[in-house]
Every structure is written in structure tokens, then in C-alpha cells.
Image 1 (spheres, rainbow, N blue to C red):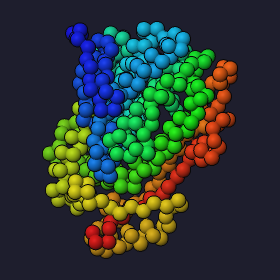
Image 2 (image 1 turned 30 degrees about the vertical axis):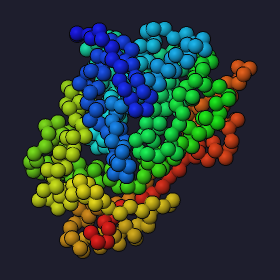
Image 3 (image 1 turned 90 degrees about the horizontal axis):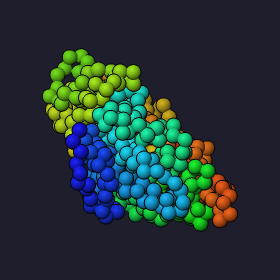
Image 4 (image 1 turned 180 degrees about the vertical axis):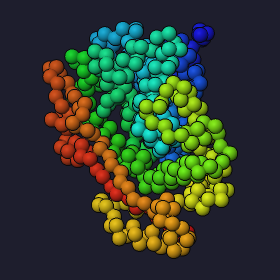
Length: 409
């Protein structure tokens, strides 16, 4: 494989200049699998609510690389030994950590492929790229999987205070225009350290950690799980489900070949081979949008109506509650819709449905955030943080939603 000698410096609206530090990283960024991330929305359908939220997974991955470079620099300054091989591997792992996302990121996870997460697809991409790069990604893959004996390297990629979260909170709040979700990522990084190969935060950083957790809670309820985003995502999922039903009974659509493949066949984790991965790598947001524009003119009532709702932002009404909705209310809404549009119950379920959403800003039972005192003692964040903050934010919060057509629809 031809390797470029010239390294790149990119201009980022969040951090300024981002440097791609070595040749293999440049080649990975240039690879078609990674370039696909330019066409994958970082925040799914949040732009239905926040018009500026049109940035991509490509932006996010490079932002994570920038923060990882800062983290390595800070840790080395504090005496943590990180070899050049480990440095390169952790950069590769963070750059590729989201490469397995499908169209519209989380909005369509498990819709195109059943029973396989984007992390598992990312792992398949890494394995395939590793063979293309003659094994140069082997250590990065071990770190990504958590199989490397230096635990803190994995924590920098996947933990409660990893470079992924430090970038997406700052970046997403910037593009959404929600300053309440903004965090000082670089200050948090300057307070990182490693004790017994475990990532810790200096005790003086406790208030910055609290702000980080509060900001994360805000971003989930106010942005990522905004009720308009939820109903838009549910409509998108149902559009694809209906299209798949129509294809399986023989209806033909003018859509891209990769999308047609995944709608024609039931793909599970077992069938997800490298050959299938190469088809998946051709899918992005544009395949979906182009298909929905085509489906808006379908003769099928359900597919046409849902597609029109999505394209023109004429969404279903959504109500949120802290307890489940009654079955009687759901049945009443179904009967109303059936009577008005002369459809079957099965068809009405595409327009009237319920569900639930959950959020836990800080998981105190999994990979806790640990602090280190001036005397070198490791303490859990929950021991020193304000209990009003940590006790509240460590609880799993669940809300229930009901979607149905607006009365004038």
C-alpha cells in the first residue's frame, strides 16, 4: 500500500488545528471506510429540533484524536510511561471507535442489521483493516477490546470519562447551540493521571467532574432524547420496516443496491461476514434520504404517508409521562385512526405506538470515576462529590412516550 509522507493539519471549529501525527493514521483517515463517516450524521435526527446539528461522525472522530493526543501528552508529563507503539495504537483505536455506525448513527441501530451493535461492527472494520495494513492494528484492537494489560489505555477510549464523551458533549452542544451542555474537555484532561495502570482524576477536579455529569444529563434529556427527535427516529424506523414488508411481497423500488440488499435479506450477527461488511460500508445517510424521497410517491398508504411526514417535518404528536400510558388510551387512538382512514389495525400501529426511553448520567456500578488525593490515595467520586448531584444523577431515569397523529391530520 502506498503511504503518504506528507502529514495533514486540519482546521476544526472546536479545537482549532488538529494534526494527524503519523502516516498510518493519515492512511486510515483517507480510507473509503473512514471517509464514509463524512456522510453519517453525528447526532442522528437532532437537526429536526436544532437546525445546526448537521456535523458528522468524521468531525467527531478527529476531535477524539485531538483530545487523545492531549491526554497522552499530559500523562507523559506526569511521568506515565507510554511507548511509541502504545501511542500509535491508542490513536488508531480512538479514530476508528465509531467507524461501525450505520446511517443516522444511533437512530437506526438494529434497524438495518438485527442483534449487532455499532461497536461490534467497528470491531469487524478494524479486523478487516488490520489485514489490509499487515497487522499494524493488532495492538489497537487489543486495547479497543479491553484485552491489553494496561487498563488505562482502554479507559481513555471507553469509560465514563473517555475521549469519546469529552468530545461529543463539547462538540454536540456547540453545533446544537445549547451552551448548558458545554464542558471544558481540555481542563478535565489536564487533571488526569494514572495510578496502578488505572485512570484517575486529581481530587481538585471533583467540581469539573460534577459539571461534566450534569452537562451529560442535560444533553441527553434536552437534546439526544428530545421528544421531537424521538418521534422522528421512530418514524424513520417504521418507514424502513414498511419498505421491507413491501419488498418481501415483491414490490420493486428505485433505491440504492446496498439498501435494497439489507431490506431484502434478514441480516443477523451470524451472517455479518467481511463480504457483507463491504456492502454495509456503502450505506450512509444519503441512501436513506434518497429512498424516502422515492417512497413518498408510493401507492402504499403507510409508506407514502410516513415518508411525507419525515421529509416535510409533519411529525406525529408525542406525549411523555413518568409512568406507562393506559391500554385504553392506546386502543381509543387506534380506533379513531382506523375509522378515519379505513386501515387495518396492523397498518394503524405504524402511526400509533408507545415506548420508553431511559438515561443514566453516571453509572456508579460500572467503571467508576476514581479520584486521587495529594497523598496518592484512590477514592471513588461518590465518596467526595455532593450527594445531591451524584445520588440523583446515578439513578436510572425512565420516561414513557405515546405517539399518534395530530387531530387535524
